[in-house]
Every structure is written in C-alpha cells, then in structure tokens.
Image (cartoon, rainbow, N blue to C red; front, top):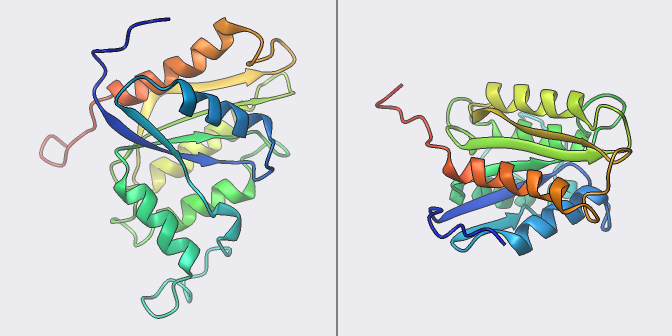
Amino acid sequence: MTDHSDIRSSHVVVLLGSVRADSYNRRIAERLQAEAPQGVTLEIATGLAELPFYNEELDTTETLPTAVREVRAQVSAADRVLAVTPEYNGTMPAVLNNAIDWLSRPYGAGALKGKPFAVVGATPTRSGGRWSHDDARRSATVAGADVVPDLVLSHSTLDADVFEDPEVFAKFLGVLLGLVEHQPVTEAAA
C-alpha cells in the first residue's frame, strides 16, 4: 500500500450519475470512500434522485425544495467535488446534469463556484464513458467549478474489471489524489 501521509486533509463530495443502489459506479465511489488516504473524507451526495428538474420558479427562498437545500449545503461545505458517472445514450445521466443545474445557481455564486472538480467512471463501452465525462466537465466549467485540467478517467469495463484489477483501481485512486492535491485558483490570483 502506498504511503499518502503527505496528502492534505480534504472533504470531497461525490456526485453519482447512477441512482441504482448497486450500480458499478456507486461501487467505485464506495471503494474510493473506503480506501481514501488518511485525512481525506469522501461523502457521497444524497438525494440527487429527489431533486426536481431545475425550475427557476422553484429556486426561491420560499419554494426551494428540501432536497435542493441539502445537496447545495453538502457541496458548499466540501473542499472538492468528484463526479462518478456512467454514460447514458452518449451523454451524462439526467440525474447528474440536473444536480449540476441546481448547484450552478444562483448564477455566479452557486455551490460549485470555484470548487475543484474531476470526473471518473466506468461503462461497458469502448469509450468508457468519455462523452459523459466530457459533458460533465463542460457543464461544471460553465457552472463555475474549477475543473482540473486532464483529471478525468473514462474506463471501459470491456477491458478490465475495476474491482478485480488493482492497477485499474489505482488509476481511480490516482484521480482522487490528484483532485485533493490540486491547488484551487483563488479570486486574488485570477
């Protein structure tokens, strides 16, 4: 096992693109959570399936759904955000897209604003979910996240099983470590 004692402490929220209880990508997130280096806390965001589709009429102090308040609070309290997602029909799943929509508001001050952001995932396709991951990175960029350049992992489960090949899982852990080590762009430096 690699020594990660020099890793800074960090609170990472995981946005899951699959709501299925035993999804492959959920299992990846749970394993990352279990094997995160000391000082790194991974919290899987809850309630993404309960978020209504984004509607500006609901996005007011009086009508804001509880699920929205909770996920915004989770992401606001985090140091970093990791999306762990499959690819559905050549793009990111609607649940992830919708979460990013809610987290991008209020415009210019949403919960994703300035948060270091990376994407990983696995799918049984040759691309390993690349289109989904590209879409998530683009959407998070527009939402104001600090999308870490080149910190993405699109793994094809046709090539190797993440849970049976330690070298493959090490790549996922490497993205997590890269996200934690990333120095966010500060407003003063921008």
